[in-house]
Image 1 (tube, one colour):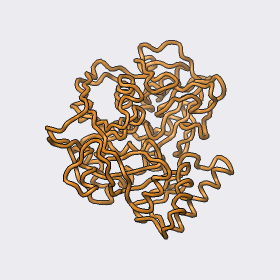
Image 2: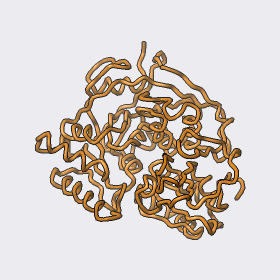
Image 3: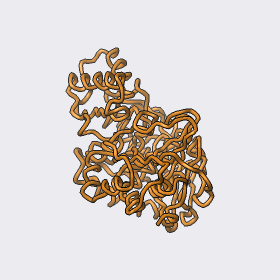
Length: 420
């Protein structure tokens, strides 16, 4: 019996010819990632281990992006703490304000994560990098500390669920809609500790930006990781970025899957996830009379250049509704610069949007867009839990950038077709 992608990657990083689901392994790590929320705890645990330095100064990455630019004294102290640690331990890939971006947009852009890697990050959306054909998963701060010290982590080899997408995408439907539809189908625990392998002709035709979006939200179905088999699209993206050699893995034809789930995408319309779970999805045609106070476009899920282009396509020559706050967050400084070159930022400002420096900001209820009691937001972010973006009695609806932009114009959740 052959192996799946995740099994091959983990076997290669344990020095074994073969691993099987359920097996406990110790794997060598290519990248250990932390941010301004999780790294301080990891540093305290790291200090208890008693080692002089990190296992590899180039393979530890620290990105202060959640509460940065610092929103208050506490966040300033946290960022200073990790900044001092990074300088003391000579961490090469520490990204300060002005160079930073939202971590899961930044690392692929910088070529720090490549196909075939094993990556842990003290952030649940580390699974984003599975879009490159790597094993990438979120861990706790204690595991991050151990990873920084030893360059290793233990895992239980996950079973794999294969998702096959066929047919032709409808207008305004992309990676965000495919993953929301999938989560709506299997539920927020439908892939609990499973590798989600996204495949089929539709995935093969997706750009890297849409692939990153899909892998990013694997965790919202409980997935341990979300992988896409590397192909020419992957190589074209990575070849001028990669800072290391990489290996392309693909599942064997006789690999054993726990389950294979097939979707005909011609039946999928733009999706909206209702409060308070990403599984509460409805097609846009089922959404009626949901007035909004805020629209957020950006985040590690949908803050890439194609997302901004899509939003600009909707917003160009139009203006947001008077009662709506429209906030747009490019994922990195490079994405921001590209959007400026293409005139997208001017379109956003003319439409009445506030355009922010790259930051996680309101996605986690951090800053720069917090909701008050009773307010509603539509967002291209990844979670809509109770209180996720502010007050516990506020509501967050998840969508793709086109739906979010159209909704900002109308003042209620609508299909892009209603404003074009």
